[in-house]
Length: 446
Image 1 (cartoon, one colour):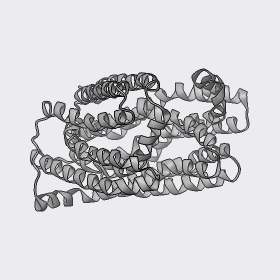
Image 2: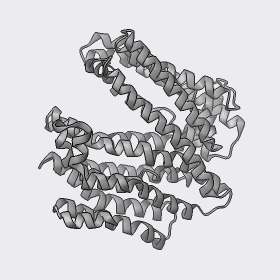
Image 3: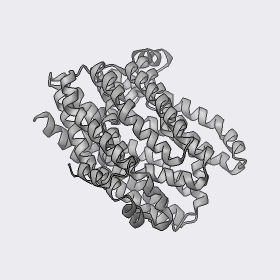
Image 4: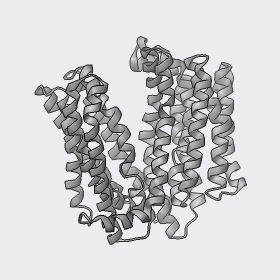
């Protein structure tokens, strides 16, 4: 079977399950919003701020090592042990933070929920290697089925507990049990048995992947601040209502990533690795996939640029109309995020994770610079500066240091694929800023 047939077979299997999960989660919010109060969600969110940061260090480089390496069963078992040891370490850190979290928010009731949430890191660690083995073998149907069944269990238990009056515990307990259910299902579908190896064996396997792990850890930390610097600045210098509008606009990037770019990226890395092992043309297939991802994103870009007011009004109502001002710029950013979102896996594929760290550091510094510059004028200018920076600076730098220097693409191939996309984004940006409605409609029609 050709690369594209195999790739799109994997995409279709994984996407169907992912879309069902997203639909179920959306429907569950309608039910839970009538059973739980905003304060109860906010209570859990206070713990999640810290737990989310610690989670940046979970499974860093371990799953990628399974997919990229040509080592076999013994190596995977040692990685499994390392993964669980890291789970214990992260649980220990979260346990130590439980009391400081309660003190920081001046809410003693946070202590025991934080203690319980800490054990999720251990339970999650038992699923990383099985999932990585399934990805390596392109068994995305099994991955999707596992996640769907565990999501149904978590959503069902959450609704049941909320109906029974368990308050915020109904959000916490199912979250902890979910990875246990995944592990039990994966055990029956992945031929690997767990053993907790000692210090010497664990350190030896750590030495094999420490370069990848170290660079990806730093990348996660840098990426965390790149994705949150604008929110911090908006929250600091503007009102809570402004931050709410700003965050709601950026949900379209998160939503599109989950439904399009994220699905392609998940399947792309192991698929290209298999193609590379078979001696196939990685460059050609990668370029073709980028064209398809960009094409899939275009309907969303079209709606955000041409019909922002109508979209906001029908989705959220008159009180959220302030979001509409931001959406055309979000649409333009989506054009470039579709490309940038696939690049980390390709850096890892070519063993260029140090280059990935360098370019991500540059991207983060540029993002913070653009956000600060825009914040001196208005919240809208933050997005204007971010978009202009992406079009004029960030994307050209990523093309040079990524596609040309790291991936080895020829200049002609880069220009043939990406120059039209960059030019399209640039003229669309100019038309939005200058409010050239006719030009904007002409451009989007192409």
